[in-house]
Image 1 (tube, rainbow, N blue to C red):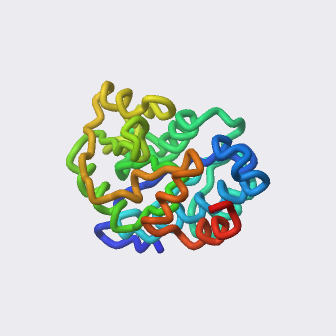
Image 2 (cartoon, helix red, strand yellow):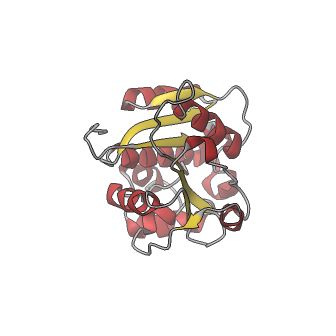
Image 3 (cartoon, one colour):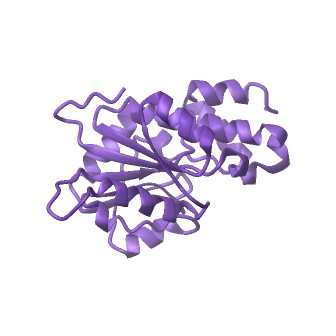
Length: 218
């Protein structure tokens, strides 16, 4: 869990849609289990973050009461999103909370992490954060090279989230350094379509997603 050691200095923002609305692209393949998948991948992503020594604070931003309860039970902070305004609105809300309470307050750097990385390992996140620490802003592309799974900023006020769609190019265009680390496959593998779960399983799923996947079509 978060240790608060001298090397722990990152605040991670974890925006998550209400579980009932998540993973819509899994469609009929997942059926009634779609909500369970959304919940499981969130739990495994959160678990990996909480076990990353460089992370001293985790803020979950969501309109879902169950996600709030799960975050609190794990030792994370929760921020209520009054309406489901999308990932970028949630990231901005989390960044504002991370920025402190006034001018002159020192803040830790922040990282927005996608909430659907069930194969994420703590050492992968640590590696991404280590490289990101050398740049004012940085981004990690997803496994398709089109989207983004992690966005960082040394100053929360200049996070400038541009997720969804062609976010890799969007983040690069507004000045984010692109992390080219090839040894972090679990940090890149977000779950959008059924085949992504099989790819994640080959990397090693977290326990919650593995349990749900065992009852899905293979």
